[in-house]
Image (tube, rainbow, N blue to C red; front, side, top):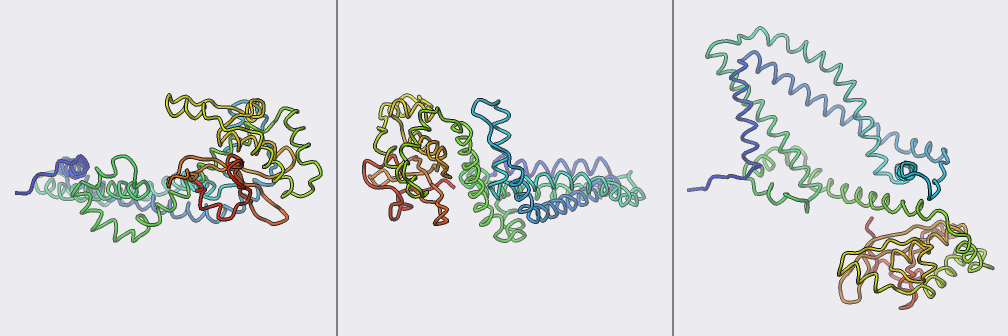
Length: 373
């Protein structure tokens, strides 16, 4: 005898249908038919809003980016309010990151469209539901038909819930409770028979790719905080950077000179790593701290390099991801990329590893450095 499926997802789906059935019996044929009509109309309005919002966000993304670039919003000073720093970080993220810009525009358009379409649609839906008032609402026959209509409405609601769970499992395949959701026999059956054929491979194959790219952009947005935190250097560090690149007239020459200096002058802080790995203590430090103590870990090397490079006019970014540990594995790591206008490319460099070899635009750099984005 097959055991009863007591998975909470299965029970929730069955409860949605059961509650809708009971509501249908209570309302009778007239009230249930009206509810079903409004549910279908509401679902259609939501799908229409999503489609129009996606189209509008895609069409306006580049014009919005061009407009944002023209605004010339300068980074706030490091001692500015947290609100100002957060505002600039979000502004620069929407300006520079295409998926984040699309998501922000999509949300804005969807809210506006859903409000407008919802207002107009609700009036039309109420008018369209008027004929159902003519259906008898009392008596056993009416309540029986009401129960059938309520059950159909419940199935529709259960399908919507299944689609939401399916999208979650596809977007975050390693997320919490994904395995538990997949253990529900009713969910698996509904997903296989209804959701997957309707969606094709969009949810299962394309959404995870989109989610991964979106996570990468959120990581880049998080890294942008260094552009603000490290925006201003003490005059001594800026002066040192000027002296280091003295005589260099190209971005390549300046980038190389700073790489050699940071890579040979800063020592790796093994005590800081030990404190974090063994006691969970993380000592945040600024580029000024790294410059003064001559100690740091990979993120400190990278932040100091980026700050000094920017002070001499280079366009540089801090990159985080995974670095090869020499033992067949990878661990959290940070490095830099410098833009070379004369070559129109971003040059990778790793000043943390400079004492172990030349990691300035090293061949096959990507084999030992895996970007988060």
